Length: 397
Image (cartoon, rainbow, N blue to C red; front, side):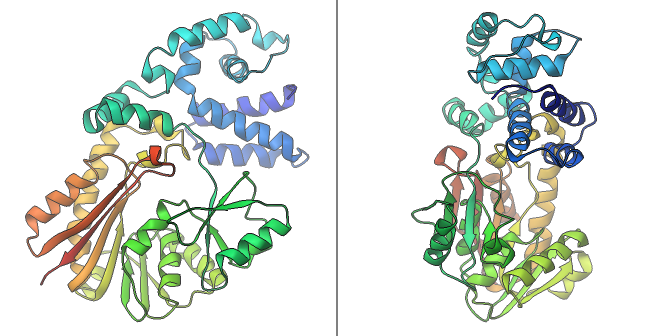
């Protein structure tokens, strides 16, 4: 694609928001795209893809560029273009950039993993410590691959084959994913939220790994189920569909605004069994020993979903991870009181760190002998989808 100064400047403005003003990448891209509604789909895609690409490869690009104070963002865009097989125009902003030099410098820099895969020192060291060199080598690469768009078919309203046919009639190709009962993967990325099938609640956007958590909970019709860290409710909606919209599903979160969004999504999905509550100590005590099933999809580092949120590599800190582990420990200890004897609880994260996953479960079991671990499941990004962890525990008495 031929570079246009207005589009390059839009990318520069977006990078300025992300790396200078501290705005999250998705919000920065959204803000810049709204500024010029005359941009066509190709222009908008260039801005989004280029921005995310530079965010993803930030350290590699900066290591190639080296020290500079003039036109840094423009020059990073130029280097990114060259690394992706494109030429750069003879603009003043690109002065000093030569294709041969860029490729030679990149070849040298890429000998070191933390530059080649673009991770900060502390994160590279932490991952090696927790996962080992061999596993981290695969994960570091896999987490830089653009995530596939996966749909979850709402079985309350339709069947997977029907949705696949409806989408195909509109020229949208999807693939079945073996061992994922309700999932369809888009062959080509596309804006799904503008489709009538999405607006009518026939489909939701939900990664395949995330779609494994609700079945892991083993819900049935008529049960009382609590999703205690529900957020905007993607897993709650999946649980409701698996319960055939029969029973009691209490979706909880610390932020009321997320629960309002869940109400909107539930209405679109045709789900009527969800009741929402802001989670606090009073609510926990009122719901003590009431749930047949309890899902704790706890706050975490999000290190299993970096490919979706590449700016997390530069915004996360080791201090934040240490603090979030304390939060996880508090949540599982406190919220587990809502589970009935003989009930099943699933602890889940979208992290690949054992210290947020297996070790948290081990700590909980050491202090709660009335719980046993039934099984756990570790999903790495190198397996093909998002990195997740889930542990199924049973309360004995």
